[in-house]
Image 1: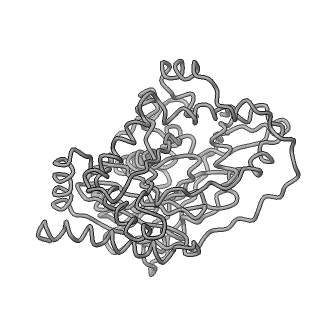
Image 2: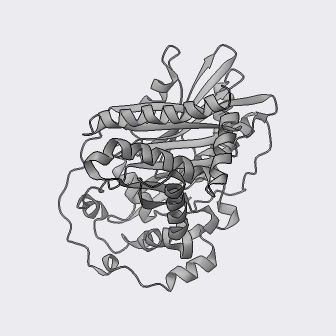
Image 3: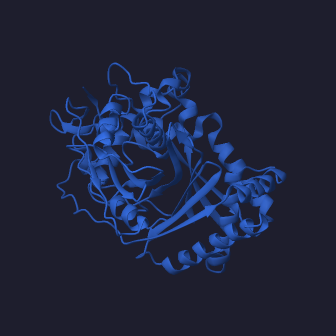
Amino acid sequence: MRRKISTTERFMLFFGRQYPLNFGFKVKLNQPFDAARGRDSLRGLARRHTLLFSHHEYTSGKKMDMVFPDEVPLLVKEAPSQDAWESILLSRMSFEFDPFTGPLFTLDWRNCGNESELFFVFHHGAADGIAAVYFIHDFVSHYAGLGVEIPPQPFLPTLYDALNGEIVDELLKRPEPEWKKQSPPPPKPFTVPPYKAPDYFLRFFEMSEPALRLLADEAKAADSTVNSYLGAMILQASAEIFGPESGSERTIQCPVDMRPYLMPEYRAVAGAYNGIVKVRTDCSQHLAAVAKDVKDGIIQKRSAYLDIEEYFHFRDSFDSVEDPESLMMSFPPDVIDYDFSFSNLGRTVIAPEYNSLIVSELYGPVFTAVFDETVIGLNTTGGVLRMSLIFSRSIAKAKEYERLGGKIAAIFKRYESAAGN
């Protein structure tokens, strides 16, 4: 099965040949892992999460298709038994995916006595964090012998195909941005730079269920969400570090889920269905005011589909371009005009038990921070909030971001102490 590759997929897969555009999860199970059974479960899910098992191929000239093969490829291997799990996850996140062969995810595993640890890594051109959690949920369900709905035929949705028809009609009525009216520059010879994985600093944090309840109650009392309230606290902590140099006005970047805009049948399958919202606020304000700015800023961007408008216009940007890769190589690097990216998956669909299989931990999403950015990823599973902080050790302000990690740890400790832990 094949279809034309989407502009977004082509962009992400191309740049993923130069540096890791990946993210990962660690899952802990209460039983030793059976690798053969795990591979069978992955093959069983291929028709449901088709994009993760696919690859791209050139067709005529520089045209390109996404292809789901007859024999699905797998990248499954046993992880070292002696290494810290954080090191295993980080090393696999730097994996260089081959978009011309697939698959676009890996699964590493190891047994630890009567338990096991699974390490999932996904190429961001094929999935976002929520899609990855749906996939993990389906995998554990299938592995545990529970029913998972598998379509009779594979399908390869794109963001643009999956959008609700009424939203598509609305977006098509809007004027195209000026950048889309410009003629692309003539192709230039180029060499794809060699793949390079940064040396990452990675730190994890965890908030227990009682402590999280206190945080949620506090956020509610401030007429805020946990996402906006916790994000505001960390943004204020960042302002304490960077404010003396560049002012108390700080910017938070928040990936937002586009699934509310999709047709229901596409919401739980693999695909990259997230956009970006940035909110700038004065961190010298009271915490509740900063949290309100973050909350209102996200709502404002999401109103009238403003958060998806640019992604929609990007959908066919390479269709008339003779050499899309040459054009992409001419793009300037993204400007890091935000303190950190705050990627909160919220409450995940991961269940505590799958028959006799118990999931006791889910860490992630942990993203490979690129272009000198700093990324905070978090999820809430089984009432426990788990968070990661990641950035390249080579960035100019690495020591300051290490200090930010200390301030985040202090925030978590404050709520744990209040909860009696």
